[in-house]
Image (cartoon, rainbow, N blue to C red; front, side, top):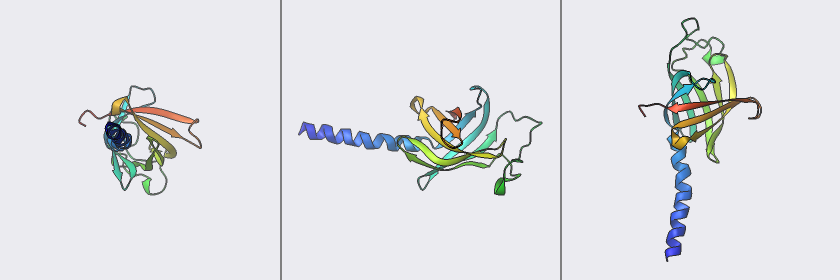
Amino acid sequence: MNILKVLFISLFSFFAIPALSQSDIAGQWVTIDDDGETKKSIVELTISNGELSGKIIKLLNPDPDKPKTCEECKGANKDKPIEGLVFLQGMTFEDGEWSGGKILDPASGKEYKCNMSLIDDGKRLKVRGFIGFSLIGRTQYWHKHPAE
């Protein structure tokens, strides 16, 4: 009887842990530039119908000489304000990470494929944007917003 109890608890833990990490990504994050130190913006990630999307809530220390609209963006995002811009969409959770979607760089107007995974007990988010396959790209580490 004890063996069945241990097996049940083990199976429950196996399925519950990924479900928790899947939803822990939702909330506000402070984006950090490629230098690993400069705080760029506060973004909000949300999950709807199993898909992760993200919106830029606030630019931190914006450069007064740079536009506050997405001048380089194409299509519907052309010249939209960067604050409020949906920059991430179509991500789905599989094998412990979010992938399959696109991330937009408002500075260049370019879209990239993206993988995201929680690290450091959910306090940081590893964000990898790439063209083609993930070996060619760049990685940023975002921090959970302190208010979360």
